[in-house]
Length: 515
Image (cartoon, rainbow, N blue to C red; front, top):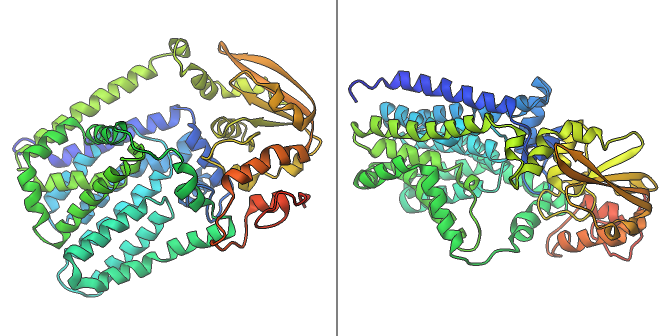
């Protein structure tokens, strides 16, 4: 490692990638997912339709301190790689301080950490998961059971509970912990019990929310989103390809070269056996899942930092600078691509299929100026455009129609009885079939508006008919998404209570007027 100044590299990479992420966060328009989560911050709750509440709490806190500009609500994502790198160093420094610094550097050099500046449910999941694992690594590196050791187990448990309140993939972290304790650490069950007790409030809060809200988290994650679950070779092959890209070609090459060192590290003590479990158990779990589901890149974000840490501990000292330079070159290519994209204009994208969606995001202000008007209720026909339009107007925009199984927070927030008799305008990207709208209004009409050469369509319905909408749309939503198994206890269901005035609906029951 002669001639390679690790401290200077850490500082340069931290500042350089922070500048890139900061620029992207301040200049890139709001994405559909971010706009959707933004409303969780506007209406903070103990949970949301499809995920636990943590990202909503974070956005609510940022909004209170810094406002709701894109750069502000993205700030946790912009800072996340720096924090995770620091946590990796802290967790591994009890094993090897120098190699821990290398782990932080290698993680910081990954393309995703240089460029990804968008806040999602994965942002708090990654933070809390790495904090939990880092605290547990330090606890496992201690040979004595004393107050500091117990405090580290407790911190790991609290962070694990917070990770569970971020996203259900925290369960995979818990599975890695369980495999580690069952396989390698039966002599220190007190640590596992303490961790579990400190984590317990997170799942308990989530359980209470689901009982009060029609088991929306469970129905979405366990039932509604898995209608397409079936085997296809493209799914596991896609998972392997995604892993190869995420790890990067340079790290893959050195992983192969250091395979003997990786095995040696994994048997060098309790903390390093834990590190191996944090890598291998999630990899195998998602591999099994990929036999029936498409495993997205973001599914593994909370776990791949540990892979770089394992590699940093296993490689020969002379290989680490070469790997760092390989990662830097791979990331530099990504930065050049992004710089090239920033050099384009809307017109350069006119011939692509993405162009209408790009216009919808980049030109939302002038587009909505053509459609929004006093005395009408603006809506969209899907959750992504509704969230983008709502963020642009800083006013909640509901979804008209059934929508998709994703992102049904609308069901918990919107009471359609409040629109009885009103005029509603639905902004669409596709030419409307007016027969789908006529039953729900006294009169309907449609017209086209142009924005940057893209046609958008407005459906205006006057005299909204609640009873017809209840029978034609809300009852269908209930049948698809709110047939809660009778064995699940419920004390509340906002959608059902507005639909029929009861926690479990009979579709023949009269709709209850809004208070």
